[in-house]
Length: 86
Image (cartoon, rainbow, N blue to C red; front, side, top):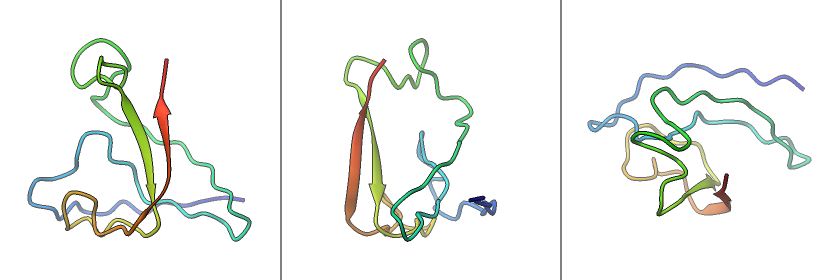
C-alpha cells in the first residue's frame, strides 16, 4: 500500500508546534505506516529534545488536523498514544 502526502500551508497563526506530524491515512484494516522528518527536533542533545527529562509522547487523533485550530487542530478525540523512549 502506498500513501501520498500533500504539503499543506500551515494556517495557524502560531505556526506548527514542535513535533507536529503530517496527517496520515489508516486503512480499513486499521494499519498505517509512514515516515516523517522533523527538522530541528533532536533525540537527546539540544532543544527541543524528545528524550529530555520530562519525556515525550506520540498522540494519534481520530480526525485530520485542520491546520488552523490550536492546540490539537480540531482533530477529534485521542484514539492512541505511546511513550517515546530511548
